[in-house]
Image (cartoon, rainbow, N blue to C red; front, top):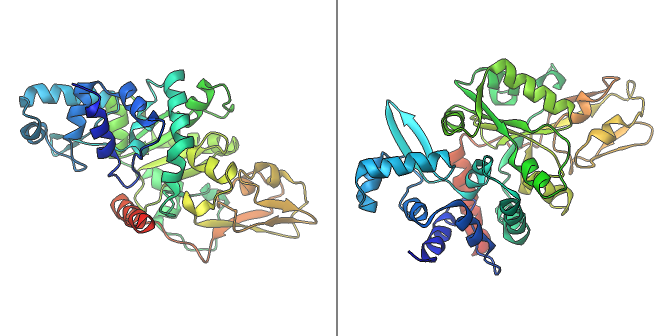
Length: 354
C-alpha cells in the first residue's frame, strides 16, 4: 500500500464543510501519516458521514464484518472514527479534521504532531475556517451576569442547558496542549473542553475524556470564567460542546486577535455589555479582562460593538457591578442544529470559490 491512500484520504476529508485543503508543502499528508496507518486510512475512506453499523461498512471494504468491527473499535479509541450507539446498535462514521481529528488527538499529541498542526493552521487551515464567513461557534456569557429583565430562549441559558444534558464529559484543551508543547502556551486551566450527549459518550467511551456531573461542569465553566476564558459552543441551538477559549491558543480566536479578522468568520456574538455610567468607576478591569481589545476607558468604559464577542468577561470581572449583558438587537440566532449549520457553511464555501 503506497502513499496514494493518504492522498485519497485528504480528498475525502476535504469534502466536509470544514474541509482539509491541500498545501504546497504537503504538511497535511504528514499529519495523516502521523495519525493513520495505511490500513486505517483505507478504512476511513470507506466511511460515511452518516452513522452505520460495521456490517454495512464491510460491504464496501470487503472485509469480514467481525474483523472490521474490531478495527473500527480500535480506531474509535484513537480518535479516527466516531462511535455512537442507537437502540443497542453500535454505529460508526467518518470524522472531519475539525471538529474531529484535531480535537480527538488530545491523548497522542506530541511535539512533532503539534508542530505539524501549527504549520497546517498557518499555511491553510485558518483560511479554511473563515472561508464561508459563517461562525462555527456561538459565544454565551455566564448566566448570572445577564440582565434579568430580558426574555431568553433555553439555548441562551448556558448553565440551565448544561443541567439538562443527558451525559456530560470533559477533556483537556487540545489548543493549549499544542501551544505548551511548542513552548509558548499560557497558564490557563487545561481540563475545560466540555461535551454533551452523544459527543460526551464518544469522549468517555474512547478514553479521550471523563464523565462528570452537571454540578462539576458548571463549576468548570465558572472556573474558566474566572480565568478569563471565552465560553464558545457550536453555533447551534442544540448543546453539543463548550470550548473555553483563550486568545493566545484557540485556533478561532487567534484569527481575530493575531490576524485582525472579522469576528464573524469564527464566532457569533449573541450578547453585548451594557455599562451603567453611574456605577462605573473607570477602574479599567474590564479592559484587562476583554480578550479581543473591544473596551476602552475614558470617563467610563466604552465598548466597540464591532469587536465585542459578548462573552461577559467584562461583566464577571467588574467589582462595581456596572456591567450587565443583554441580547444584541442585531444578533443572528444560532442554527437549529449542527446539520443546518454545516449545510450552510458548505453552501457558502462553494459560492465563495465559484
